[in-house]
Image (cartoon, rainbow, N blue to C red; front, top):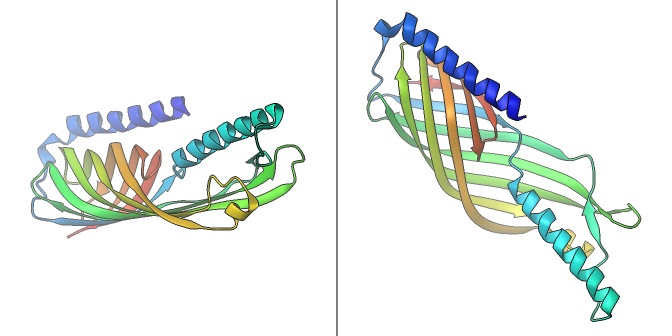
Length: 221
């Protein structure tokens, strides 16, 4: 994954260098225009699932110690099963070009993740954990290369995530109940490229909100 990630970044940098050398006279200023984009990101961010598995592991260890010393009852140890299902992260975003290099706006993100939870000792199915996440973020994008056809940028976004989930449950009763909570949401776009004039395609490499690799289409007006 690290090699792929590095290769993608180097590829995008190579594209920027080629266009800068061959088409520097065709730079353009899109100040005062708007951009509407629909994108799909892979893989679905799973930082929260990793945190829940760590918490569950600590709880299982605590339960084993309680049982060993006879200090109290414990929940039956469970663990994450196989066959994870997920939807990619869908992102709908609007941005306004304040000047040739600065774009501000906002976006809505959605992703879904589910996987089975099994009892550690027997491997029998316990319940299925599901997570639906909707995030609303304010975004800032910096276009550091502007060409009539190709633009290169980096950006960052922050906002609130609305999560509906039973993730991290310790008992079957908890697993049967979905809860809604709010969390801080963040998106970092390390490097991205748009290709086209009014109607354009977009490819992006980043972390957190949208996923590692994101692709989509946009309309500039």
